Amino acid sequence: MGSRVRGLFGRIGGLALRSLSEARRDVLAVVPGLPVVSVGLLEASGLVLAQPVVAPHDVPPFSNSAMDGYAVRAEDVQDAPVVLEVIEDLPAGYVASFSVRPGTATKIMTGAPIPGGADAVVPVEDTQQQDDRVSIGSAVGAGANVRAAGGDVGAGTRVFEAGERLGAAHLGVLASLGVSAPTVRQRPRVAILSTGDEVMDPAVVELQPGQIRDSNRVVLNSLLQEFGAEVLDLGIVRDDADLLRATLDEAAGRADVIITSGGVSMGEYDLVKKVLSDLGEIDFWQVAMQPGKPFAFGLLKGTPFFGLPGNPVSVMVAFEQFARPALLHMMGATNLFRPRVPGRLLQSIDTNLEKVVFLRVRAALDETGRWVAELSGGQLSNMLSAMAYGNAFAVSPVGTGTIAVGDEVELEMFAWPETRTKAEVLDG
Ligand code: AMP
Ligand code: MG
Image 1 (spheres, protein in one colour):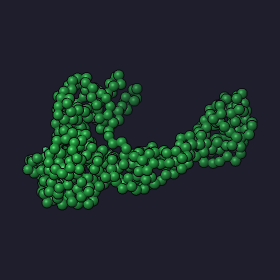
Image 2 (cartoon, helix red, strand yellow):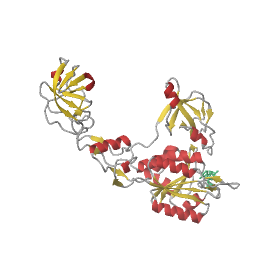
Image 3 (cartoon, protein in one colour):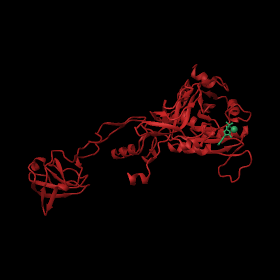
Image 4 (cartoon, protein in one colour):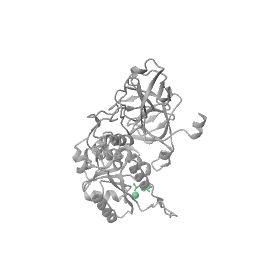
């Protein structure tokens, strides 16, 4: 592969063809970790722990009832039906005033602490109370319907490791532990911009001949927001070297990462390439992948820069293969890549022998519970609708050339959307 540093900064403007894995390694080796901060729980949603979390106390913090019913001594009810004296009525949030002695029971609600002396709860359905007497209909063993202190998380356990991404359940566990300001890596602020004289704001009412609407920026914005980045939208920049230089300069000062689309190929007006070649900090690569080549990467005044191609599908594929894992790595995440499942293609297709090809497919489970996939639309790199109709990339590795009907492929799931309609549920 050659020296990483030379590969990145030595051959300015050079167009080495490199493998996807090589390029990815180079990107991940260079991107810096974001600063470590403590933030409130809600602000931490989607961010990554920078330190392990050790439980300061048990969860639940005390042993409590799993049911509405009667707290008893299990040995008192072995010969049920039996009648016990009800000594107290204990809602959740209160502590018993009395211990459960032989022949007595405490009426207890779900979540209330188990009174001293009691070691089991008889569900209310198996009882019948009259005044201060309760008839217990069936025997229970010691521990029945009792949730032990620390049964979920024991005090002193390492609950989460550094590198864990905080989802809803993680935040709930932290809340239950009283960890109200977890130590995470800062939310990345990502500057995005589109380039090209033909590219117009999507809201423009009437396109002039030769113009197209800017789809890349809204795609990038949405992809970034989906995993919790803060987006700095710098709009559309005309094919004007000075304007582009000034905008990139500003972006480098304000963002943790810069992502552009367009202007990185060999054309006369591919100004991202021209401007950044002058600055001498960015490398331009031909990556052996389809779609997604060409691609620019480097540090612009220390800020990671991803120069994605202009074609919308290339943007999404290059984002998925480079920017997303790099951002997750900067955020401190241990796991960086979308899940892949093995599946079979239901069509035959010729692919590029020399490249990793990411085919846009619709993947689903067949009647036997195995993943199968069909092309979700046209496979040219401008045909974005195939991404919208699809949910996975069928990955055709270098050296494949042809995939025949029924061949096994890896399906990289870029969306895992909801299934089953209301009608199906009502019928089912
Ligand atoms: P470029 O890499 O700038 O030569 O662009 C390659 C192709 O992508 C051209 O057909 C452009 O018109 C198209 N393209 C560039 N930017 C965008 C954008 N923001 N939205 C949609 N298509 C674009
Ligand atoms: Mg262009």
